[in-house]
Image (cartoon, rainbow over all chains, first blue to last red; front, side):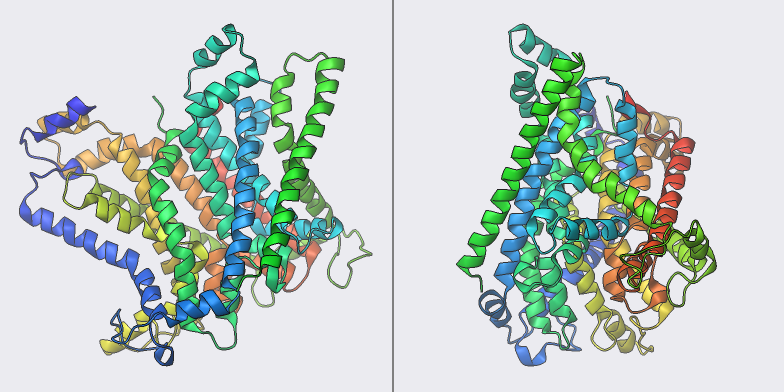
Length: 297
Length: 334
């Protein structure tokens, strides 16, 4: 691959579809301006949230389009952090999310191993079933899950939420992990078994460490599923103030009779920034994991 | 503020949950071991034991609720008939097509809205994603910065992004209306005018979905060897011919699953229509939000169960047809 790439600097004229520095300067200008406009559109709503969050309280809604107001301050942030239940929401979301990701990754890692290494009766039915679950509209399961939660007295607790999130994330996680396990040669485990390791040791000591990137993706997938969920949390947690996760809390902030836009935006920023950093740091992993199953060989 | 009392309480709750899960799993594995290895002397006991915990979870939280839902769909269960319900056969399924599914809208109009919603979104996702991927697939200054900025909409938590967009559609203070006013045009009633509300939903979702397509398609483009383009250039192919005959066919294995997934996600997208519209205009409901409203606002449980199965069937039929025509997931069962 690297040898092939280096030939592209020979100075031959490049086509539009894999151009290089040899593009004409007009074309380069055009490409850069399109990309800059696209970046602006992509970032604008986020810039607006920042802008509203630092506006002083008496001019929250403004018809002025300039992004940084002249008398900016951080008052909305201190209010959100120290006078509202915001930290409580974040804490609630965080414990639910981490527990979900731990349970979810473990469930998926072992199940995917079974699908990848054995050809047992019921295997393809199982795989098709997992794929089918992806087509179930989320709202479809809400009524039965709600009634199930009432019967098991799980309404208003985190217990039901954690189990429900980790189980609903399992099918997609199994698909990702199975695809990754498939690319790891069977010989590695066989060699370990000849040396006297049990099947389980071979899995734990050889396959799992080699699958770290895929495990990271699955962890992240479970994490975001639980972290960003609104629907199930609303159904299971109801409206108990102390239990709310941040999506419920934020919606409540906006849904109030008179929305405090500054505080709403500050709270959004405080949730958004760590989430975005986590996402951007892991995006390389994420992308290679998502495309792995489809691009083989 | 956060109180230590609540922190301790939620921690114990979470830890006990994990203990329950671990304990349950150990118990399950012991039972399975005794049953499969000791009694049945099964050679393939290992995969079943590995699958058991996830299988139990899926049976309890997916299969059982669906079976329950199927049962309910044949009854007249609603808030009025909650404890005592009567079996009314296929009446609910018939009602979905004959009666309005909500107060004012019929099934066919919601279905049409959903198909339109999915089609418009996927079209622009692929168009925008492919366009940006093609622009980025070259050596250039600032490529990394562009890529990072363009991924942002995917990185923002969806609920926040959609609530932020909703405030942009504010009649007086939203960005689009301020721009319209400044160039002397009439501002638009984004949140109360049905057609514009639908367009607002589409704009939001297109903004949200382009980065995913762009990233997947860029990965696909990068895996195409430049030799193909070099060879075709020697033969004098134009840029458009290269795109038609090299880029598109070689992108198919990446594009097919991305489009299937994208379609299902868009079709089932709850957050965007729900938060842009905030349960106000029925005309802006797509199938999944209409389903939520039928179940949780109008409390027609039996009816909404039948409604849910019809939506599910549509998705399954769509995916099977698409897979058959494109041979999309062939390698996955090897």
